[in-house]
Length: 150
Length: 150
DNA sequence: TTAAGTGCAAAAACTTTGCATATTT
DNA sequence: AAATATGCAAAGTTTTTGCACTTAA
Image 1 (tube, rainbow over the protein chains, first blue to last red):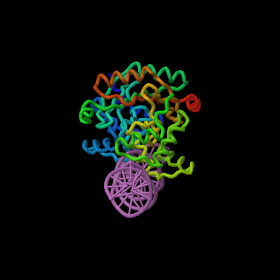
Image 2 (cartoon, each protein chain N blue to C red):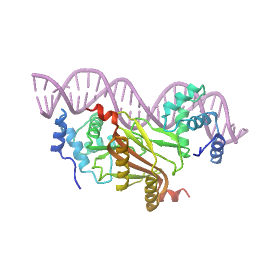
Image 3 (cartoon, protein in one colour):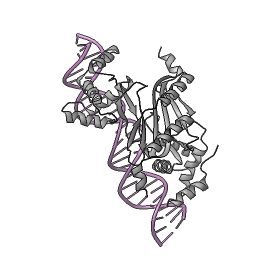
Image 4 (cartoon, protein in one colour):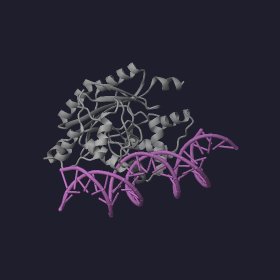
């Protein structure tokens, strides 16, 4: 398992394009690098956790940083049917995973699928697209919610 | 190709659950039934088109109706990375399609994939989920945008 | 030194809600 | 007649932006 970014790598990436390394950007990267596998955070949650750690960054800066890091492909932006976007550290295409989400309780299961990646790669090639990300999102009703529906 | 709903079927579905058929709901269904394949609309766009047709429905009602019809699985709710949700007529799982989206210009290509559906079905079964929908979302950069990036 | 980043508050975009009125069953 | 739906305006969420101040390179 490769951690794609540390703060040195982030600085290099930023500086190459004329952006600057800041404590806020470093904290946000660090937060995601230490996030348990399977968790993803919204902007609001990132902001909260920064406060909890005793670090500082305004909510505006969090939004700006998440957007920037998603553009740089350091983070992966996802919409799992909640009202806000979620972010997680971007893995390489081969390592990336997909989501099975319960529409009632939003319980989410992650899974990998090499076949899915291949489908994405083939289609992108066929259409002349440069492939960046491939997300399979499955909606269903989880066992618990099925039972409670009678 | 099966059109899953007409206004008679909609009325039956609604009445079964204690909801009522209204002109507004009928108009919205009709709009989606006549939407060219590959198009999906946001709430705002639905509202606009209703005005253009000379029909009437407030934006609130549009939001309420889209939500209801998505719950009833008459419409399919999607997030393609834009700021709002999009809706299209829900197809059966076997007929449903997926999206390849350019992150620069949002140009979207639809495609079918039986293999993807099978992956979804297998995983749902394995986890005890009732399968409702299966969306493969591929992000990339389209040929035109690749060229313009130099 | 100077170009870029931050924080704050204000605004924008999208969506939901309360309530009086209108409509469906 | 009774319960549900609508329209409007007001409020709620999430996200973006303008601007003065601060900081990285």
